[in-house]
Image (tube, rainbow, N blue to C red; front, side, top):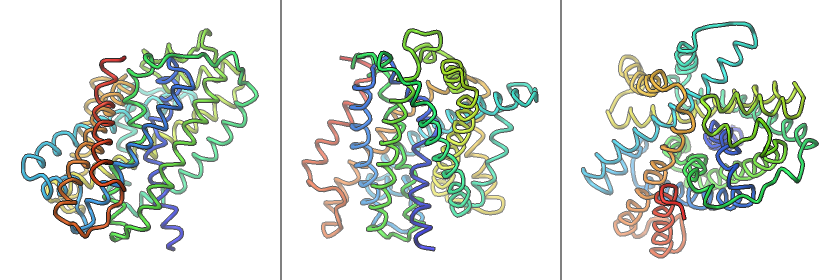
Amino acid sequence: MVIGKFFGSILLIIGTSIGGGMLALPVATSAGGFFWASIGFISCWLIMTAGAFLILECLQPLPLGSNMVSMARHYLGKPGELIIWFLYLAFLYSLLGAYISGGSDVLYNFLNQLHIHIPQLLTPILYTSSFSLIIYNGIRWVDYINRGLMFGKLGAYALLVVVILPFIHTKNFIPGELKRLLPQFSILITSFGFASIVPSLRDYWQNDIKTLRRIILIGSIVPLFCYLLWDFVIMGAISPQGPHRLTLLLQSDHTISGLGQGLGETTHNKMISKLFDFFSGICMLTAFLSVSLGLFDFIADGFRLKKQSFQGHLALGLTFFPPLLMVLMYPGMYLSALNYAGTLCVILLLVFPLLMTWNARKTYRQQQQLLPGNKLSLILLLFAAIFSIIIPHIGI
């Protein structure tokens, strides 16, 4: 039971990370080239994993059930609580909107292949309503369902990599430029935004800090490796000068289905196209479930709502209605929502944990520090956070 719970928790972090963001990464990083993309991935992994450890450190003395709102109220007072409320809702709504948009695109493409034609406007409603009730049943349901989906996802991922490998050509790896990668840096950050689920995992493990540290570390390294390999095979298989080049998809309203079509037509292999559709569908769903769970818990904590009966239904409505409305108004918001979420991700999951940790270490001097280096490491992380927020907008 404990071993299954341990690996299930790791899979929740992997599922939160390897989702819609992963599918967008070859498109987002294509202009920068594989070398600079790799540097970007490693940098984002380092700073965002550090942020996850800081959140866990700040949660140690707080009662179970505490979320980002409770943390801000405890360490930063009422002003910090209000700011967290606004930014965290904007962040999770942006992420959820991106995953509903991308998942709806995948669902619409799948239904068309089955010759089932419904108005495209109804697809987001169908997608959201079909899977939202899983969240209502709590983290245990999400954990068990996510385990099955993750095995399917990782299996499809491994198979995709194997079947695409023969189509890789070294001539497709362009040198790229760092300055062309930087405008999309926020999307790389978002792909490591798993720390939003740390409070839920901490409740699940009843504040077992030692185990949670291992879960976070293992759960974050796996996506890093998967991202590097995924970028390598996609960039190597699709010609940067061809009709299906990745840079064209940056402006597309159908980024995910377009990437799958490009892979299928570039390799002239229908199996790759079908397998990509299956993989992208699971990626979107696991990310949708994980982010929805974090948002549902956040709203229940912030509004002090019970997660059952009428109050649970109210929390569920507040979780899904705003992002669904955004997608209905802006159907092609997938990449733009991920980019916007990236900036908020740094502020919420790195800057605010830094500020809270600074206060926590002054208040609870005997508390275990999960990130070594005392004040120096916090200052260096703050500079990294500021750089990550500013650089996508000003370039070099």
